[in-house]
Amino acid sequence: MEQGGFFFQALVYLAAAVIAVPVAKKLGLGSVLGYLIAGIIIGPFLFGFIGEEGQDVMHFAEFGVVMMLFLVGLELQPSMIWKLRKSIFGLGGFQTGITAAIIMGIAIIMGFAWQTGMAIGLTFALSSTAIVIQSLNEKGLMKTEAGQNAFSVLLFQDIAVIPILAILPYLAIKGLVPETADAAHHATTWVDGWPIWGKSLLTLGVISTIVFAGKYLISPAFRLIAKADLRELFTIAALLLVISTAALMTMIGLSPALGTFVAGVVLAQSEYRHELETDIEPFKGLLLGLFFIAVGASIDFHLIAESPKIIFGLVAILITVKFVVLFVIGYFFKMGLDKNLIFSFSLAQGGEFAFVLLSFATSNSILSSDVANPLIAVVAISMALTPLLMLFNEKLIQPRFGTKESVKEADEMQEDKKVIIAGFGRYGSTIGRFLQTNGVYATYLDIDPDNVDLLRKFGLKVFYGDASRHDLLNAAGAAEADLLIIAVDDPEKTKEIVAVVKKHYPKLKMIVRSQSFFGAYSLIEQGADRIQLEFLDSALRMGTDALCNLGHRRHESFRASKTYRKNVEKFIPELSEVWQDRSLLISEAKKRMQFLEKSMLQEKEDFHKEKDIGWDASDIIKEFGEDKI
Image 1 (cartoon, rainbow, N blue to C red):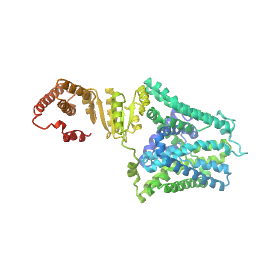
Image 2 (image 1 turned 90 degrees about the horizontal axis):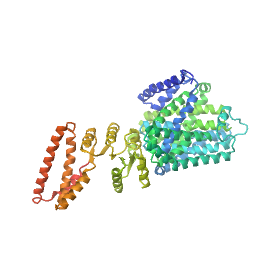
Image 3 (image 1 turned 30 degrees about the vertical axis):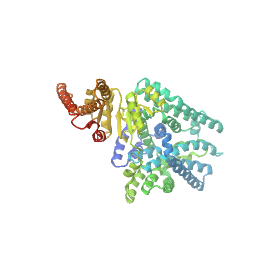
């Protein structure tokens, strides 16, 4: 970075993103296209603010893709893979195989060797996970049938990179000399000069090590780190995990994104999954934006200007072949027309793995740089066109066929209604077990790593994390949840959680544990929907037992307890309006207690005059059946 040094370059990138992305969003183009346009503007072929460094920045920004695939891996729980197995292996398998075969055939017809054709076919069969997921998320289509099917295909493609990287060395063409730069790069790996069987054994060994470490070593290590109670230390550890995995894969000559994807899959069942997601997410977003800018800046307009017909002809062939294959497969998998169009338009481009695979193929004597460079330009242009294609579909094609996808299908594909319990100590775990025995399964969050570890040994799925963090609540599904139960034993932390929820999820209902009346008043004032005094029920049970031991009839004692509890719960919201004025609060509380004492004594006197409404079924239904928040 020569022009003005690091700070000038950082200024250029940040300013370009801050200006271009909001404008693109305002015009309805989406953030991805905004980043790409920003990259083109500041790149070496327009204003030249970043000189010839687009490719260098691309290598750095690819780390954003690495982090994104780590997060994708974290989402891949066995239950989810099983649920999507048909679309992952059906849609994904057919799309990758058929597209690769067709493009290979076209390449052979154009005069390339079959080995080169196969490498190009396998490379071009892959789509851009970064652009597609970002674009679908922005349009709110990720939970739709089209979005889920697109995600499944991308998932299959990400997994398919493993065998593709293993196959490519076998396609080397004798007499095709590797590029000097690539050879030098390749020489930095541990496997330089190794036979293919040796590389394969080392690859299997390293992946097995990642799986073993993720399953048996990472969680204990994170538990120790969590005990230090330093949030930044956990973030550092999360970055260390991702970077060390990526570096290890690089040293054995494989894609770092692939390694972090495997690490993410292994950690998908970890109790630290949500915390890892929230720590990595900000870096992912920043670096992905940088990646998109770098893609825009690295488009070689000189190369395009030299042979525009060939470049844009190849772009048209790539997009057309992929769109047709996707559309036909979508038809056979019984996708509706509007869903199929979204699915096909979103995936009809080359992907970021193409940059890796084309470089790998060049260094393994499968392609020459004269062939690889135009292909890289084709992939970059097809990626840049993706937001425009999706916009074209959204604005011009969908209206003709009825756009029902964004609303109706989102409801169909949403997960079941959910409950989140924040705080899983004795109080919260009792609630959780009670709900579970009634068929209600919740997402549990707790800040104590020892408690999380212990409860996991009992078979409960508890995640480590601070529930007052907006990003953690988001990762736990607060945006789609029906109810949040706050059962933490720290009153200040409870207030923090309530404040965060009211700010970011105003429609999410909350039942909040309070250890005192004053705490209850404060929480009501903050916007908590319902308060549960943690001591009230146990105290009333003891009071009821005392009355029974003093000779009172048991059912009368229980009825008195119920009446008392009902009135106390009624008084809390009323008193929360005056609780800041201590003298007024005492006065109002005394009035209510006097009223309660008088009414209960009167009720006792009238007990034998009327039917016992405390045991009347209609009274119970009225109290418990209609009393919903």
